[in-house]
Length: 458
Image 1 (spheres, rainbow, N blue to C red):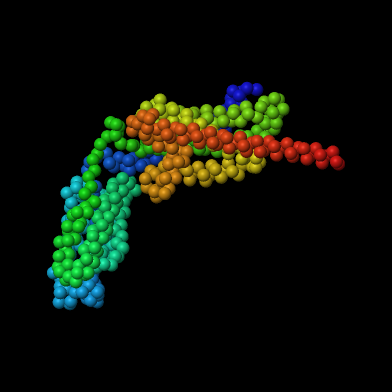
Image 2 (cartoon, rainbow, N blue to C red):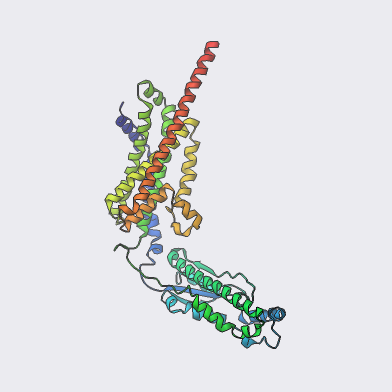
């Protein structure tokens, strides 16, 4: 029996398996269609150059928090070498709202990006729910008091400015969050400069003069350290349109469901053994190497069929332009090889243990975890950075990243590292599978020897 006969046999069995066909061929098409249409708004939101509408909620009370700070300072003036009559409203009061709203949100560059409106919490929630705003910025209770502590005293209070975004406005809300981080970074840097200024003044015993000039010094520091002077330019990358939801999930589901092919293939060797066909083939002179090579080739071909069906469906019916289809075919080939390697490695362990628990665990748990951290189900950018780093090295993550690069017009030079990585993954898994099968082979011989010896002694 030749390798091609073994491949044909396994492919026919896989195609006849209706459950496998639904899982690996029909399900990705259904999910691509549903997710592609359901999340269209999330991917289309940045196609226009309109400003991002934002609600700002003020949870603080200026009067009470300024009074609270005044009481705090009167209890600590001796530490700063300032007398009671020197500490007046004129030499400590800083307009915190002017810093946040005028210097920050009304900054020329920020105004080109964000259009804000002050609202109460309930109104902000309603606007966010109805998608009238992309995000809600919440200035917390004690915001004024904590800002005074940070800007006037040597102490440091943590200020958590919250940003809540709508799930369908993911990109916009991330931009708002980064802009707010810019404000926090600017204030933090300015506080460091302010502390140096006050410490130097106290050493020179001119604390009262330092506080008289503190507001001007702070404004100069903030202006000098402005990191919120952001600007966003909308450009087409390599003349390609922005990523659509249909394109994203075509890449994501195709990269995810090939992992199920690996899970399916992990059962093949043990099924051969249980059905006695494995022993009949070895007795009939079929080398084990050919049997293993046949399984690898079967999963490779089946994975390529998965890719081709998804690409044809998304290209014809969903109008997804995958980019350079020759490069897409190359990516599919290397991904299929990596999947085949993973499959035969899992198959060798399943064969050695004699049960399907590993295969079931891989399909039910591992595939879903890899799909999540690899970006197949949600954009990887919304995950913690530590998980993003791991996700980039998953099999589906590498494949998906390659598809996205080709979509945006990148060339072979830009994805060759990904292709090499996929090839290495495949080779490593095949090598590990060969070691496991060799161990199993030696163990099988020993078991037969001892069985024969026991029967002889009997």
